[in-house]
Each structure stands twice: as structure tokens, then as C-alpha cells.
Length: 147
Image 1 (cartoon, rainbow, N blue to C red):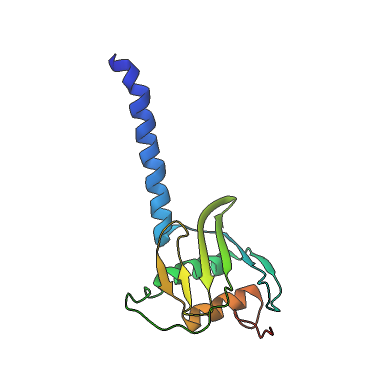
Image 2: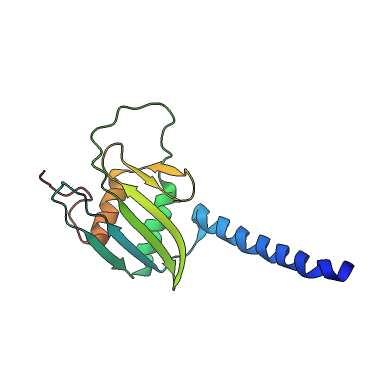
């Protein structure tokens, strides 16, 4: 009877190790080597889609770590300007393994959702916005647009 429990215990132990590693990566300790960014098309707004892959490791890691240095979103209620729903989807890869996903919301009350599975949200700063825009080869995260 005891020997039948060994495979189950081994499986649970390995599962604990794997999920612990995933949790560590979500706290900003991953070492991504590539970034893939997609800007979604917004119906009714004249903003073109964007699909960019950045493979410069030092830039990718600098942006990744900068995201974890952003201040947390304040807990108090704030009146936000118009949010048009513009979102940049960031996928950070270490080689071919996806290690982190983030979403950057540059309109309304700008914020970065650092983990799409949790409510880990930070305030989007002008410095972070400029860094991301430069990496993407665009003048600004919020382009001039017309309705």
C-alpha cells in the first residue's frame, strides 16, 4: 500500500517545484530574451494595429525589470479621463518559453497589469511609456487619432 503512494507523492512534489518556479517568474525575476508586443485595433478609432518583436536582450530585460519598479496603482478612487480601450499586449519569452504576460493601458488612468492572472497593477509612468515606445519604434504609446 505504501509503494502505491510514492508516485503520487513524487508527482505532487514535482508540481510544487514547477509552480514555485512560475510564481518566482511572476515576481519580476525572470530573464526574458525576447518581447512580442501587439496593439489591438480599436473599432471606431483611426489607430493602426501594431505587431513588433524585440530581440535585443538587454532592452527586453530593462523593460521587464522597469515594469516591476513602477509604483502600485493607488487604492483610493480617482476620476479618470477618457479611456478608449487602447491596450498593448506584452509577451516576454526566455528563448521559446513564455515567462510573463503584461498589458499596458495608456489611456484613461494609465496602468500596467504586470500579471494577466492577478490584479498586480502598477501606474504607467512617462518614463516607462517612453522606453516602451522607443523599443517599438513609435513616437508615443497613444498616437494622434481621429474618430
